[in-house]
Amino acid sequence: MIPTAKLDQIITRSEELEALLADPAALKGDDFASLSKEYADLGPVVEKAQALKAALKEMDDLKAMSEDRSADAEMRKLASDELYELKDRLPDLEHELQLLMLPKDVADEKNAILEVRAGTGGEEAALFAADLFRMYQRYADLHGWRFEVMEIAESAVGGYKEAVAAISGRGVFARLKFESGVHRVQRVPETEAGGRIHTSAATVAVLPEAEDVDIEVDEKDLRIDVYRSSGAGGQHVNTTDSAVRITHMPTGIVVQCQDEKSQHKNRAKAMKILRARLYDAERERLDAERASSRKSQVGSGDRSERIRTYNFPQNRVTDHRINLTLHKLEQVMTGEALDEVVEALISADQAERLAALEEQ
Image (cartoon, rainbow, N blue to C red; front, top):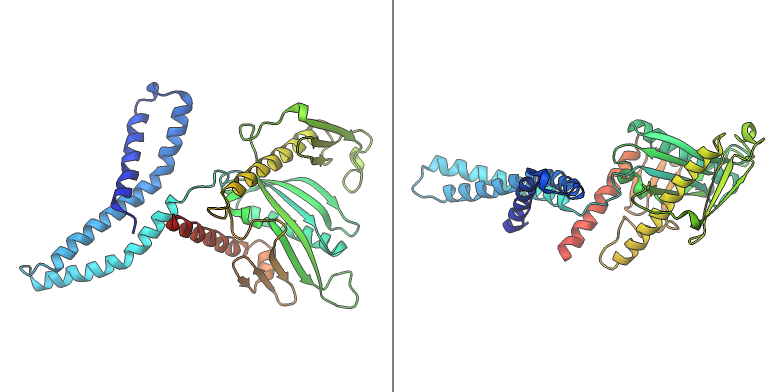
């Protein structure tokens, strides 16, 4: 049970913020912006805290009424019944408040950079990587998100060796962040005449898109090379040095982009991806520092970890982190049933973080 003192503390802080924001002239610009955000974020928490406080008071009143021997027997019975119903509702109300009080991942509301790469399995792995990329594209469409292809390197048979996209919309990173990891497929390859089931893999990385205020990139730390585009999709621009490769010298991170006809546009796209990778590296460093107190995402979060298997012969998708199995592989691959996996992962993460809070 959340202590009443904690509920009062939340409500009092909201009232303090309301009073401060009533006189914006007395606040500096930065203070006003940060306090306004804190006040807005507290809104749903305060509403639920007030509802819980009201329920606790009502429970005390009903308990007193049901035990009052001087009251009418029928009224005592009615109070007792209402008390029973309220006690039944109280855990749900408290759980909802606990979820609202969980520390928020500051990146949850950010847009995301999606990177899909073929892993072990040759051409079949590249075909699977292309299937995954299209799955996320359809999923983005279903959520009304913008899906902008940044870079695609095709394989000989039409698969993707590597594909990168920028996804923008509401709550993109919050819903996609648990997709990072190794995705394994088991199916009979189109290129396999013998009909044997093969296992191959692709890696997925979902990075929160960094803004200028998130990560500062010093131009002196960059080596920028330009070259002629080549390969599928590059023929229309291969007469000029429009492709761009950026190397971040301190970290060794290399990003390249050749999708656009303009060198300027390719550089802008490459910088967007570089910022996201640097921001993600900093997040991982901070997460590692906090690892002793709690895990930052479902499973270890290690991208070398096999997180999900797509078994085509059995029409089965299994997420190994939460032991979830769905026998609707086609609907997952079209993006329609992917939310069932995403929601389960979010719930598992919330349960894990609640348990960690209770241990403190």
